[in-house]
Length: 297
Figure 1: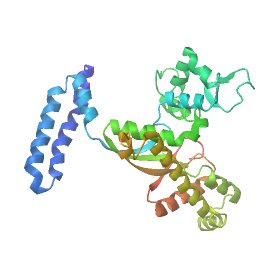
Figure 2: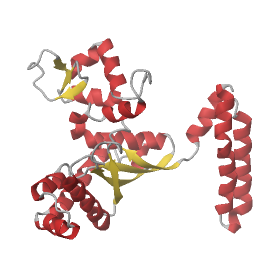
Figure 3: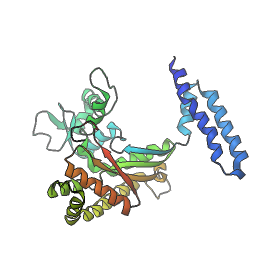
């Protein structure tokens, strides 16, 4: 099967979805809506085997929402490297990871700005921090995906910039809703879980965590969301006449629970996830992250 024919076959349900969407339109608007949906479906059929027109059509098609999106995984590797240079961070050349300064303490550690100027190293970093040029013969996709997150972690001070990039790109792709994953409390719940320790009696463990100050961690997480969203607004110029379209994308949050951590930390994070979802309208739930096949999970 040719690549174009394969693409056409995969996209055929899209035409059906457009037609079925008309059924959800209120009865009074049905004729006009049906005509518009029919025109859209006809156009899709006409450009199905014309990739440039098909790509343009799909780019402009309203997409709805992007759910279960890892914010740190939704940012381009090039952005992480640029931010590392702007923040005077370092690159560990052998491990291909962002490192904290000073950059002269190890002969294999150089300024991120110098890494950008080195074309070979720059390409190697982009490949290591993304799925670009991924080769299944050298590394399976599971490991390539999960290994990327630890390589640019030192850029986590740029969470607001990450949100701005994700929102702007969503708007340009006609996505109107983002549901992003973030550990908004940093290590707050993790540290409380460590200090309290494991107790197989869940009710008793819950009481211990509350007594240790888990409610204060809720406030810290809420403050983080305020700061991150304020930075998004600054980067995108929200409220100004020339605001980026990303300002109009609705953003909600999923609290991340690191399931590969010790059980007392996982329990504390799950508790915090429930508490955030109950008290903070921007948080719609929590999600377990890290590999499902790790030892603790």
